[in-house]
Length: 471
Image 1 (cartoon, rainbow, N blue to C red):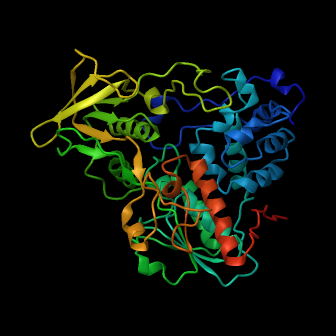
Image 2: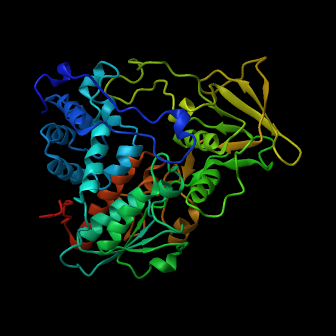
Image 3: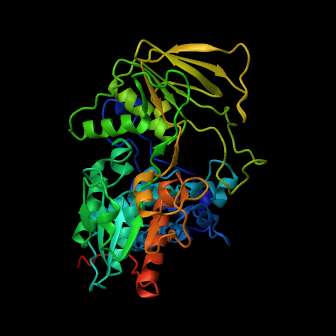
């Protein structure tokens, strides 16, 4: 694969992102890719590994060495075909996936030297859209079976597309006013501009999928379908049980991000704003980073992100997460590159204010469970807006209770081969496996579609996405 010895000849190169001082003034994407000639060199670095561990690292099992080699050989349309064989929406993962495939790359044994897989993936699909290679692919005939998919996030969209291309009539229900789930309303435009999501929704519509937006689905709405797939996500946020939680100005992260995304799209602005405020973000994950970056763009007076856990090591700890596992090491988000402070090993004690929060009180902790407080480390900081980004604990129970589906010990939908305890009702994505990565969501949607197909026809006959004939 690639050029023999290419990993010795060419060093790892990534395109420079837009400068933080520039990008904080707008909401456009800031990640760039290399020119095509240089990307071919990066593809040439892919080794002919006896065991390509990048496959192990990627939940989708993407055929990474194959499309790296095709990019090196300047065969981009074939590279797209290989990419689409395992991934319905590579422009989503190429923007938002943390790239566990790169952590598992054999070259990553020398830390920081992995093939730039994510950049190459995004470049393939971006060129495909620019060249008009990606078009609607409706099925040639219909099976007569109907499927309802509840939720239009990445798992729901992937499941819907797979089942529709297999010939079933698919209806996607979405309670928000547009498709994409958190891709559209939870993730800011500067990470994924919304036209990127919309063009896929349009493609699925052209393929024959019906979308019903602004519908809070009830069990009766689903009774007429031959099968139902629940892709409702894990949307119950983890709360912060401290005194003062009830004060105005304390919000879950998604309340803030939903408002910001709608405001950027031109809708009526949200009442939750960071402009001119001292902002505290509780939680150090991707959602927390998106809150930090959004607050920068609103002109916050200050932004501080706090984490419960202690500061991880700067490099891969081989005794804890050896290669090819995802390394538990220190990472600095794009948002913190733009500004703000980060504090590790912080336990929030209480929030105070006169009806509205104006201070947060915390103490240092041991950094590891049970996070014992460190005496004499109490501290108070100004806090006009506190955003809780501590993850999610499970799917919302309303529809699940109506349908009578059983839950597992973590509160997620319990399944056997993606089918719930109620025959004909399936589940995929975060609603089934818990809060996870976008790449897992797409994989869940694809595998669930195969399980539904088996129930409807007795065997899976789903076609792989095909290249458009543009001749």
